[in-house]
Length: 576
Image (tube, rainbow, N blue to C red; front, side):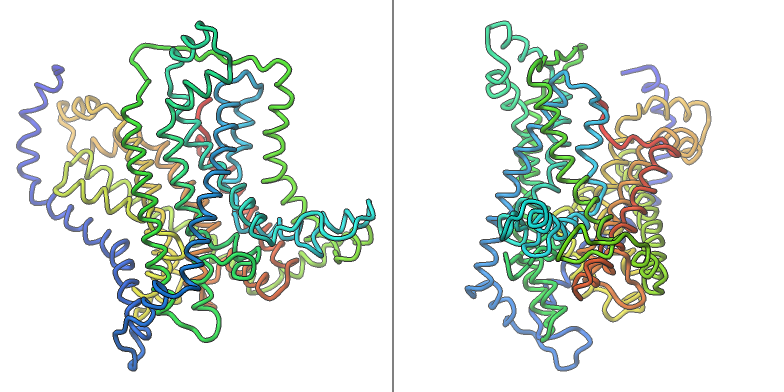
């Protein structure tokens, strides 16, 4: 116990006693707000699943028809099995790749590690839907650029690659989930005391033997956490399986939810019932993820003493290792965006690449479209409002729980993190049922509310982590000097957590720009955003316009990332 602790304690008691009622009101207010944002949509989705129509339909009545059809009939059980099986495969592939990349960057003497890490996690900041669209342009069986190029240059017949197959869809989903696995495992490797590895080397063990017997077993909880986190993300993925074939190539529950509301006959009750099924799958995956995260505390190897990591000398393996990282970046970023740029700025036809003529006509036509301009404005508006409101709520939550110790803080913490267990398209279904009979429905505000609720876990956890790292003695010193609670918070606490707050804002901004799953369930003619506009073009078979809108979306994302990195000095990657 420090002197500051002893001297500050008598001053803290009266303030806390006088503020008890105010803090209780704050706790109740936060609980009600989180309940409306997070809990009510999930509850109403379950309620909508046991009705024959929406709440505005006077003929609708309560019925288990949709629930029984989804939970007991063979087509949906088959889709359930395919969704779970594909998600497990994607998790295995993404984690295996992410672990390999994390080990190479964190444990070897590769050059330019900062640049390599930024390249590996770059797909996290870009839209998976745009990536899937690019691979559709590259690898569709007939008109894919790779297949056309193979026919033009090498005289090959048939398809060299086909991404519109179950194998292709699984590989593309794994490709864009690698950053999640990489970041989880890389963080564990960087925080691991290398003394056990040093002991292994001293006893004559080789590099790979040490990695398999020492390094990976120690970070096993992080690997398991990454596996189930990717599983949850994949199970709720809509954009990639929908863009690459959806129900035709590989049925997916998330795609079935959308088809139930977008194709005739429209069945919102059926969509809600499928959403409940997907919700249970995600909840089980999150339960395993949280268990693995808790078990990780048993494997703590970070000690109070300093240590220096010994980097493994790759020698002759350095070039192949760099090649592996370069191959991933090529597949996840370089090739897809070359394809998007080529299709956007040429008069491309599927018959010949060499015959295509470079032109700006396509781009100018899309840019001059009133609907595209409106969707761009909507995207900017939503991507500014959603992170701002989410971060403001996250600051109030974190400060109330960590510093004010409000009543029910543990419950507030759990509810704030709950949306992680709810896939975007499922949450979009719940938000639809919640605001269907309100003026918010069909407006831009329904997207803002959906995005705030969906991404509050990310903003809250980042702000909360920053707040935990602030030593309370700084605030106690301010209180001893006579500063009020609010003055201490505004002049000391909030200024010290500013980097974490800005990082949270940028992250939610990125997610808001690229989000398509929830947005597509809530889209209307007045609130269409770029992600939905690109999807609409693709649905009508206009791949060229979809690619151009995808590039606009990417340009907006890059502008936000560059502003965060160079204007606000936000650290977008982990320290190497």
